[in-house]
Every structure is written in structure tokens, then in C-alpha cells.
Image (cartoon, rainbow, N blue to C red; front, top):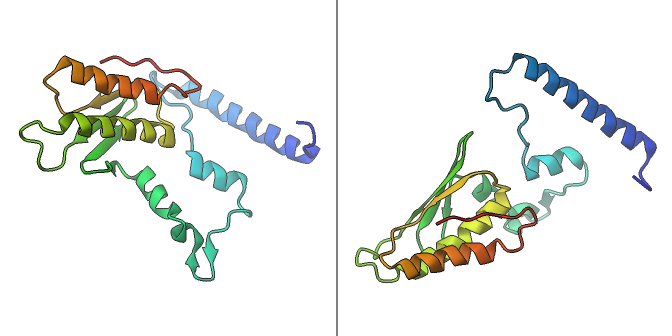
Length: 173
């Protein structure tokens, strides 16, 4: 807190105390299992924290749209995400888990190219996990690969993509 105005610290402390009191009240009436606090998400948190510092428009139109940020935000709130090279992820959050289904594009009926598709899908799954701040039990349904060695390659792609995860990850396949 060094270098921070004492009024800012006091205001944040008051907000946290208020939040704590609301959670304590909710605990008294909640029927387990219950969600006591939901995260507002990264965009809402930024807007709440810095309401007057976010520039959203420029003379030529929307600055966020111009830089492709609006499209990225829309992708983050959509349950469907395109996979580079074709296909899509369908991401569904529930209270118990996050389910991610990977749908192929046309042309995979004979199985050719399916390994490469699943490897691209694995990279996009990890990207979406990081961008959306997904955690807990995450179940991913990949298109079925016939060879166990191919399935292991996809699992290894996920593991290697998660190696930078500061919280650690456990993968099963």
C-alpha cells in the first residue's frame, strides 16, 4: 500500500468490509451447496476500478472496434468460438463444471487431418481457459481419435500449453 492515498485505502477497506458482511448474511440463509460470490469478470472489474480512464471512442469511430477489442470481448461472452482453420468450440459453464465441446468443420468424415484439427482445438481450448479465467473441473470433448498415440499427442499439447499456468493444472485423458 506504499504510495497509495490513505483515502483510497479507506474506501477499498470499506468496500471489502461491506462485501464480507453481505457474504456473512448470505451464508445464514443459503442452502448448501450455494454460490456466495460470483466474480464480475475481467472487463467489468476494469470498468468498475477505472471508470473514467477507459477510452472507448476515437474521431474515426470506436477505438475498441478499430483495434479489434470489441470482437475479442464479444468472443469472450459468446459460448461459441471459432477454431483457426475451421470448426468451433462450444463452452458451457455450470455450477459444477465447465464443459467444452469441440465441433469439427466439414471434411473429417474419413478421419484424415483429425489429429491436426484436435491439436489446433487443444491450443484454442487452453487460450479460452486463460482468457475467460476458467477454473475448477473442465471437461473437454474432442472428436475421437483412433490411435492412442494420437490421443496422447493431444493431451501433451494441452499439458505443454498449460505449463505457464501459475496455479498449476492437472490433466487426465
